[in-house]
Length: 151
Image (cartoon, rainbow, N blue to C red):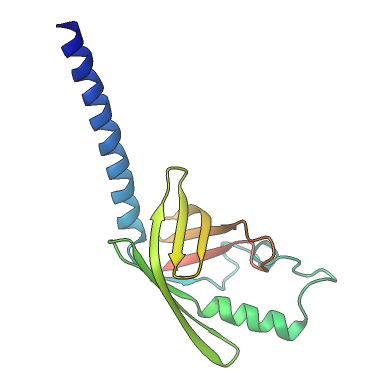
């Protein structure tokens, strides 16, 4: 009889862990679902906090920085509740589009996977419709963090 009780308890614990993980992912699906735009306002994040080497002698040339800043300000993400996403942006004279899948791992890291990239972000909801994104493993890039605003 004790073995049945132990098996029953283990089954209950496993079911609760599964449901907690399911609710966790459902919660993120609902939070992420919809259109988001990169904020160009310094209300949540200064330019120095957003860009690598901002204001330093080894930063990008003025025209390069202006193109980067315009490109970031043009970025719009759409996250669907079924785990798909798309992103549109402009750079110089071109318009770009990419799409793929998104998910949140057990460490609360956002993964954006397309046909040729796998980007990972540490995320923090500053407000329910304001999301801080910190790229991981992208030390060569110029953007060290950015804010998305839900539209």
